[in-house]
Length: 149
Image (tube, rainbow, N blue to C red; front, top):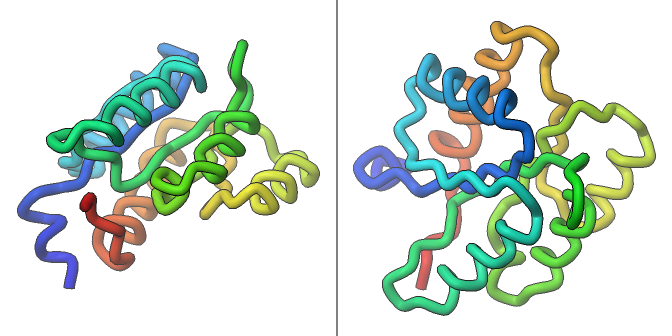
């Protein structure tokens, strides 16, 4: 079923403004044996620019999933999510909100805008590793993701 994902893992777009959180996430990917290539965008605007440039190229590969932080300067994660889900090409990419906020309004708003999953960032590194392992198992070993084309 997901064997093709293991042969050619789909890329992950990580939208995260914090270098510390990016590095912790990458260490957790490594510890979880996540082999997917990762494209890091430090802001919502950079992520949208990247997605639109990759989506317009015939050779460009859109990500299999997007990990999106909510609280970023400039174009924050909420607005970025809204733009992604309003785009006919991009809306099919699963968006996983990975943020420090546990505010019920944020959770409700994100699901209302089309987020596929909302995860509060674990406080500890071990908690992050566990969350990434579960994310990997579900999104890349159980779920079938849309392919480009």
